[in-house]
Image (tube, rainbow, N blue to C red):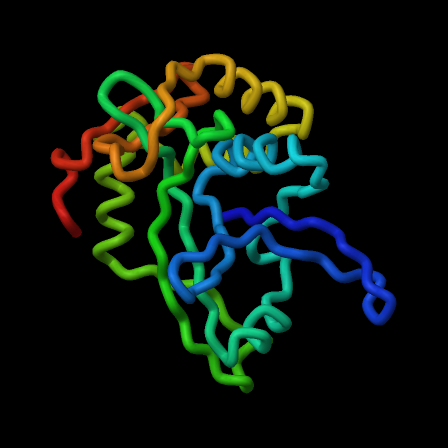
Length: 200
């Protein structure tokens, strides 16, 4: 899993970084990407606005300042694909792909902030497995591992290729009926209807 970080030095904290976040209602949380390609696509979108985000593995960051700033809670928005209809992706008003996310809330005691890991429920894991199998990407773990070992230039090329292959429409999440996943092996977008996946 991956997050986006942007260095924002402060007078009292020269190494301060901001984590890419999403806010739904009052719950602000870290965006955590299941796919490195998805993180790259969002990186391009954010950095077009003169930002300087970089991708880091989730386990490489220290979430304690974020947890402390949210009174012992860690909210995570797991980005697992992009909003789509049956004939292509849906784009925001800025012309950017829109991540589909599953929000989760973890209450973390001060004693355990140095030693913890995210653990998702069996239902969510089974649903994600079904999503990838239905999309025709059954060995997602192997694909993800290959991405993790790829050079940054190769990853950039994969993300640019994914963006160049978008067949899309302007719209919004409310119109989304499908999840779009990019298959870097076949170099094509795969669309999965939510009604085929059940409601786990």
